Amino acid sequence: MKVATVILLCLLLSSSNHIWARECIHQCYKRLAICNQYCLDMNVGVTCQTKCVRGYEKCAATRCGLNDKY
Image 1 (cartoon, rainbow, N blue to C red):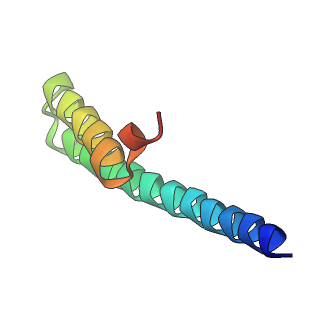
Image 2 (image 1 turned 120 degrees about the vertical axis):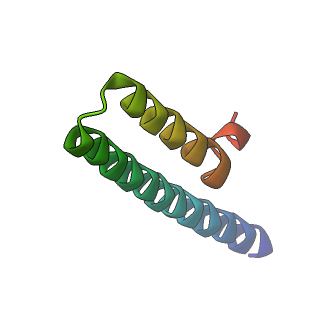
């Protein structure tokens, strides 16, 4: 019975981590969309959008722990 409880607890914790990671990535993506819209509105070009993408990648890697997965 204890083994089943531990396995169930692990599954619940891992699923909540996946939900949290998805939410985190969604927040990073929203920031990317806002940044890209700013670049379009200000008509500043590709360099600005490149910075947006780098910011998204950094957000996903550091805040969401994507580097820790593998």
